[in-house]
Structures are given as C-alpha cells and as structure tokens.
Length: 68
Image 1 (spheres, rainbow, N blue to C red):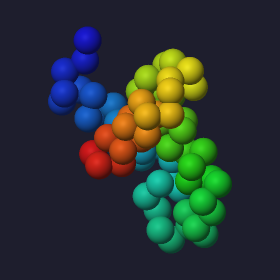
Image 2 (cartoon, helix red, strand yellow):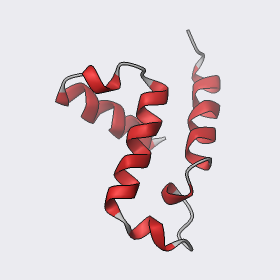
Image 3 (cartoon, rainbow, N blue to C red):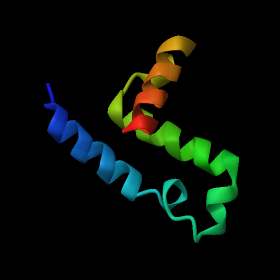
C-alpha cells in the first residue's frame, strides 16, 4: 500500500512525463484526444485494472487524478 505522499509524488511524475498535460506552449495540449489519452495512461499507471472498472469508478479515478 502506498502512502498518500508517495502516491502524490508518483502522480506528479506521471503527469510531468506527459507534456500534453501541462506544457501549454506545446500545440498538442490543444488536442483533446491526446490529452484524454495521456490521462488514461496516468490512470492505468495508478490503477492497473482501470480498463475493467465501471464507468462510475473510472470517472471518480480520473477526477481524483485531475484534482491533485
């Protein structure tokens, strides 16, 4: 089990690795499909069975990732 601190550090590293999520100077950040793809990758890293979760659980996990 991860601590909250280590989970946040892991989340930050996942987001930092995907320029589309944070670098507004890059035109790709305007591409909604690329942004959605990047958030899906982050969620899969945070929750390995993300693809098999129900829609409500997926939405909750994505919301939590974006809030942090």
